[in-house]
Structures are given as structure tokens and as C-alpha cells.
Image 1 (cartoon, rainbow, N blue to C red):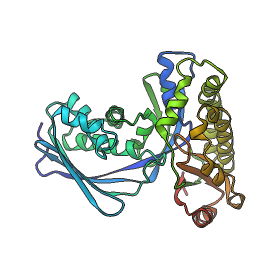
Image 2: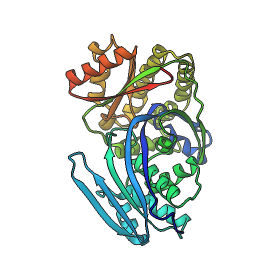
Image 3: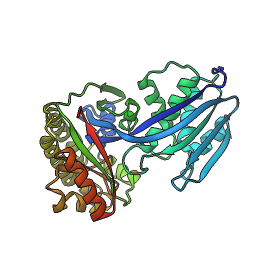
Image 4: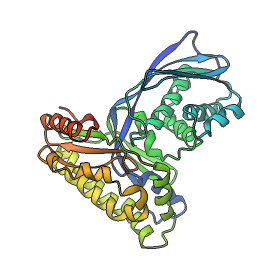
Length: 358
């Protein structure tokens, strides 16, 4: 399959923040084995930050380049042989594993496509902070193949290839992460076994001013996932029953409240939903993973008294742990004040994000 001659594209894929419903994506997937498990529901939004790349076709290789945070340039050239791509995709220390995983899946479906030159020349998205940096590069790779080889894939198709590529790597993501493919807008995702339903028309009655905080600490998503997944497909004790309750009926209740609050454009109610969501998560999830979800840095920031005049509430992000936090600011001006306070008080970095029309 031959691409257009000398075709070069500039692509951008944002990160995503899970506003509500973290972990319920993979939990809903267990409905295949246990239909008593409630459907998973996640409300996500793309971020202002993301991954930038310049891509073109290559006749025989996968040529990957990246600019690191310190400005250093890294690159690798790989053949399109399945064994070589699989070795790179499954290597836990490889920075190229995600792209190689996607390349394998794309060539499995479309064996006649050739290679790719992908230059990730700029990244404004923090990595390993619960903002789906790995999913973003997977979506970007799938989109590059799609656009360069005129495969006419839909956004949902790109998400599927990105997901299949990422789960070949040591990173065991859920399907929510690839929601970054929809861009910088709120999306409601529902998970019923292998079935994914997406509502791209989430009503927002007024601007909701969010703050995403990089906690400058560490988290272990693989350990968190391993601990929480012990509750599935069948719960065996009070702790595992609590995890299923959290990611099922409790999540559904909070989601209904949050969607209503967004429809009203009420930042105060959205913030209250975040406070409740974090309290429920702490109640049911910490006992299942005390070593990784006690999250002292996250809770120190969430409980900061100096922040309360500027925010309605907040919660953890993504798989939780000490990766990132999110807050709902009371006003646009309070959003900036809170960011300055967090940066000065804790030495952390913040990303402003506003949902709805300003």
C-alpha cells in the first residue's frame, strides 16, 4: 500500500483527565464473566496539553525520534519484522514500546502498509501522572498510519488499534485511556464487557474552571490495578465487595449527580461531587491497596486550608495514588490564584482547564 509521495503531516493528540469514574472501565469489562457487575461509566475530558509529532511514510522501516525534556534527541530505526517489533513492544524499559505495539496491530490488519517516520518533537503533557500520556502516543501512532495510508478509519477505530497496541506492552491500560482520541472536550464512556458506548454530547451549562496538579511525587499504576482487580470477576470478602460497590453502584450515583451539575453549569455542585467521589474512593479502595492508595501527597494538597477560599472541591486523577490531583475553582480569577498558591506552597506545577463556554 503506497502513501501519497512526500506526504508529511503534523499531528497533535491531547492527554485526558478522568473527571469521574476511574477504574470502572476495566471493571465493566468483567461483565463478560459476571453479568451481575454493573456497567462501567467514566466521564473524561481532553487536556490543553499533549503530544506533537511530524509523521511521514517510510518504505521499509519504523523510524522513531523524540525530543526529551532536557532537549536531548533520541532515535531508533526498526525493521517491520514482527519479531523485532514485538521485542521492542514488550520491553519494559523501552521508550518506543507503545508505538511498536500499535505498528504490530496495524500491520496485522493491513499487512500491505509500509513503515513510518514519527518525530515526537514536542511534548507538553506530564508523563506517568494519570493523564494518559501512553494512550496519547498510541492514538497518535494509529492516526499516523490511518492518515498516511488513507485507511479511512473512524476515531473509534483509531482508539481500538491504540488500545490493542498498548496492551501488548507491559502497561495494562483500560479502554478509557484512549478517549483522548476525541480531542479536548468532555465525553461520557460506558463499558459493558467488550462493548464501548460513547456520548460525545455532554451538556455543560456554563464554564467549569478546573486545575490539574502534577503532585511531583510517584505512583505505581500496575500495582494499583493488580490490587483492585483482585475483586473481579467474583468478590470473595468485604474488601473486594467494597471495591465492586465503589466501581459499580456508587460510581453510577455520583455520575448522575455530576452530569446534572455539569448541565446546570454549577461548579459548586461539581466540586461537591469530587469531594464525595474521593471520600468513597478512600473508604473502599484504600483497604484493597493500602501501600499504593494511602496517597499522603495527594491528601495533603486536597486538605490544604489555604486553598479552600478558591476551590469548590477536588479529587485524585486516573488510577489515583500520588500522581495528579484536580480541583474545581470558584471563578476564572480563583483558578489563577489557586494555581499560584499551589506552585508557591508545594512547588508543584498546574494545568488550567476550562470545560464549557467561557
